[in-house]
Image 1 (tube, rainbow, N blue to C red):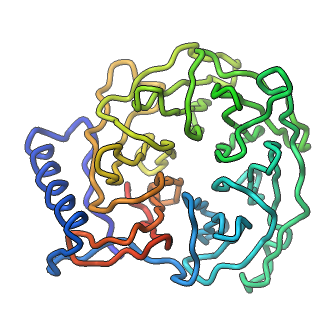
Image 2: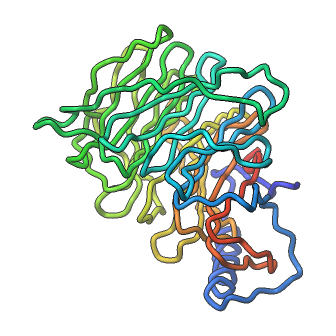
Length: 347
């Protein structure tokens, strides 16, 4: 598998934008016509084609393997390792799961039917046969009164989780469409919920990622379909208190964000509201954001009925999508509701 060539955001020029537009127009024609030329090679890999999801897939890099988690068509949780067969975990959820690594443990979060959050860890990570992996009993995190008046988080929206050395951050959208944050410590103690400053409202799941400069970045889709970001300097627990718009974005689904340790940048992904195309860009971490331009959106020649997910990997950032019954510009067919991924897309 070969990842697309990479150029840093501040070096992209007008010619790059023109090429991007041409590629997207070709992709749009292929998607909507249902046919495509067959002279290109896709970097996307298909996961277990017997698996199917009605939502966004999630992926995390753990102990040398890429672990995917999905909500199945039966509303239960399923997982696979390195693109292999999916195995059923169980439970009931009406939203996509979230997965990450915290203190060398693989954590899987889901939204319960009543709006509470539930979390599980991989119970036997040293088992060499991945198909024999099993998960711990779920831990319940109460969300009642998260937004007052006895409300909880929206049970059809995924939580967002992001790990620092000592805290696991959990970000969720309340029934009142406001964004809330809590933390889990190294002893699995759970903090009270508090609203992320700035008064944002969203109808989609939020996104979150941490970076080595002690920053938590939270993204949301605004009521104008633009993507906004807010930062927490968690070393001193200082929020920016206002939301900054990420330029050149237009989405009707949840955004995604991941730290690219290979280049010390943040990568952002979203589903274009007009075309359904999966787009990504890179932007600097908060330490230098004030004076740096943000990246030009980069097309992946694919569309998806759900939001894409980005994850941090040793060589860059990976992208995971749900297929949507179409051909890309190379004539490669993307099965409906099947999971596809690119490892180290930015790297």
